Image (cartoon, rainbow, N blue to C red; front, side, top):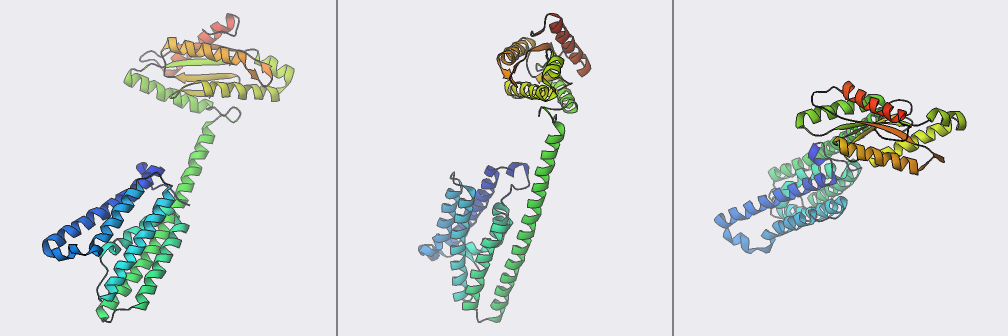
Length: 343
């Protein structure tokens, strides 16, 4: 399983793609610096095409990483090409009896990043293949000098250790991510009303308190709309509580679909809903009227139902209890006016 990196900026696919791009960009910078040093110390080296190959490869992979290809394809292609070039660098180092150089020096960082980007299972498969090839190259042409042999053996052991650490780290992060997802889902579930799937009483009270704080801080408009089903007791008495539950779910769904971004809908009581909307009173009255018409025109659980709505706008310094009380009074005024109306 692939999973987002554990920082706020890397929870998304784009964040993980940025991590790949950052690594490749640093590779390109390092290789450019290396060629720049050669230009001063050994200019003849720059005449060899092989000297430019790692830079060309890293730059090409950097361009690929910014394309809108699936992340797994970008990572797999990057790792494949990197592995081929790194193994070539390692093989050349073995031939001349020296230590690793060139793009192969990035192998430790690439091992860890493969696990972070691809997850534990795919990361283990990729790094295992690379390690097998590395070991095969080493056994096929082991350096003669004892000191160089020891250095290469240490390299193989360090690669195995990094693979183990990368696998363990990715497994830990995967478990932590799954636990976080489960906790988030449980929190959402706990805040919702079990029947209607809008916010429950405690959750909508929290949202109201937060909305009042924002309105007071920024001087932005805020209104409360209290919505109550008309003659709901009659619906339960005539058609049964199962139908009554379907009516509540249907009305809640209509309310949820009708409010805009930044608004909250919650079940306040049995057949009463509260909408917290970032609107001035004229706009909130318009929204309430539209909701009344939409519900009246809809078949909810096979029935024609109506609602009454009361609207109150927040006044600076007012408490949540006060503004709700005014909206509730407007609701009762709508009931006294014959129901199926807005006040």
